Image 1: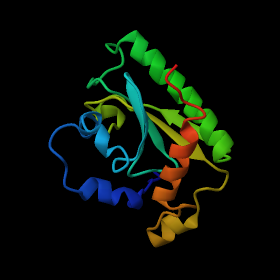
Image 2 (image 1 turned 135 degrees about the vertical axis):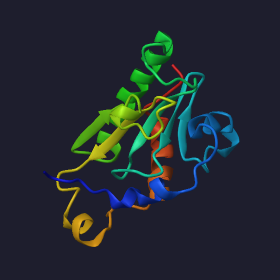
Image 3 (image 1 turned 30 degrees about the vertical axis):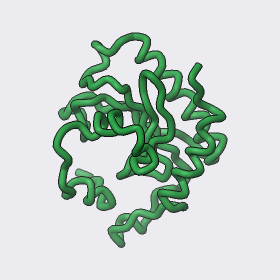
Image 4 (image 1 turned 60 degrees about the vertical axis):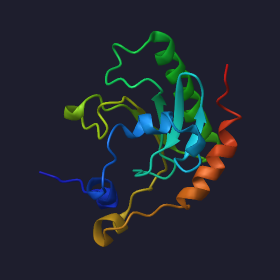
Length: 165
């Protein structure tokens, strides 16, 4: 049996958890968008950087509605999320020269959702050779750029891809 270790996510596991839904906290506090690394928001959903990324530039598309399943999500919101996901994929490929993209949702705790009570789409840019020995031998994850620099760059770029249309 093989094991996959992700020591860079230890902070996520051991940190003090906020009471309530972290995504609803972001929804209800638009004045804190920069502090929460929100890249975009409209009347249906928002795009935010993952604070505990698996890859540099890991972003999420999240409905404003607090809901734990896609089957009961309003069709208009689902289609809007899907459209934004598509545009964010293009942005990461063009602006970050991603060689590929990991895209998906973990629906429910049994599927690995860390925040199961509020659905969210993960979009992770990937590059050939972006995972290497340093993670295994040094309990360290290497990112090619600072988290806040990535945020500022994506915040600047997203307006060319995602609009309120």
